[in-house]
Length: 226
Ligand code: SAM
Image (cartoon, rainbow, N blue to C red; front, side):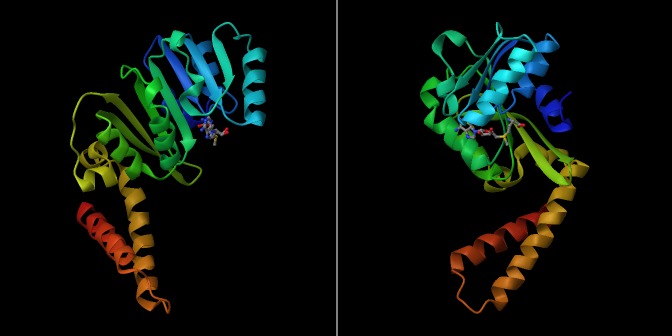
């Protein structure tokens, strides 16, 4: 069984997909989807040896070696032309890292794949990359598990798309939906930002003005949002 977090990610993988799960660790996601008959084929990519071996073991033990290829590779280098991948999941890492994986692997993207991304923080730079690369955000979720707020961002290439600075910060669809988990996340972050500003105000060493302004701007956006 999958964690609630990966279960929510799984829900965004289209039926019959050929999935590349990058940073797959134990390959839990592709194994669970394949056992359910929800996907046609999968690649589980891992850059580190220990999780790569864990993924190999999961796939072997569930007897899915014919359908799931486990590859030791950095980011999208795990994807080969013949895989005909239709969906890419990159989950459980920082948004900046996910962005870097997508950006340095751009040449391996056909533009037809659905991206299912689950960043742990760094959502803004990730959304910025999506916008600049012509990806429209189709679905967004915030969920709470083990006292952490996780986000899921689903995107597909669409041609030029524009999001405002606030939309990149909060998520364009989440701003509209205002789910309880989303509002709770930003209530908590507002308190943290206010503490940071109070600390800046008292700080003996000089805090760069740009840094203060950035946090002040974010605090204002959050206040307006709530
Ligand atoms: N995706 C799983 C999940 O969401 O539960 C595992 C998340 S685990 C915290 C992150 C994994 O990403 C680690 O196993 C790490 O080795 C892998 N990883 C980090 N950077 C990577 C990269 N550039 N290419 C492939 N895997 C990477």
